[in-house]
Image (cartoon, rainbow, N blue to C red; front, top):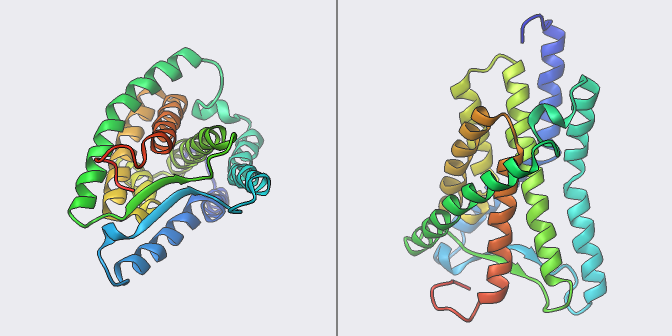
Length: 255
């Protein structure tokens, strides 16, 4: 960043590492440990399960609901931190295009992206699992109670906001300010996105890294996180709710 002093650069570097350590960077380390545990465990990967949204208090639905809402709220704290840091910088979340200025633009392009990536991602997952490179992903295992679908939608939105604000908007902005090249920032963002999905197996890693490349290219083109956040929320909503409605009823969906 022109005019930035060495101290400023050190501050930006430290700030970025702290934000990642409090959020998806820590998730990446956790996913790596989980993956090592899975590949060193006896039996094929496809015979092991990775549950994305699971019950926190089986048999106690109201307590379970409290835990689900708590988890969603806590997961969004790093987003609040990023909003604070960008506001202190004098730009706010508007600088990364996470605002309500262009809702139609964000939603329509998000829907198109979701339609293109969703089917491809499902095919990649099924292929990777069949080849023995992926665990069986269980999108949800919540009890069949009234709040099941709303919580799944909340979880999908939470995933989208957390990942796109931090891995797409915030990280790319900070790496740009630190003088990283376009290729390096793309690689860093995509690799981070793939790494915190490694707990699903190599298919989850490769598929999400590829999605990360696409998202970075679109973000560079449009200058807005909004469309990718909308796409991510739609993809996860379809995965979570679709699994809740179809699991055990169709033969092609692993359970």
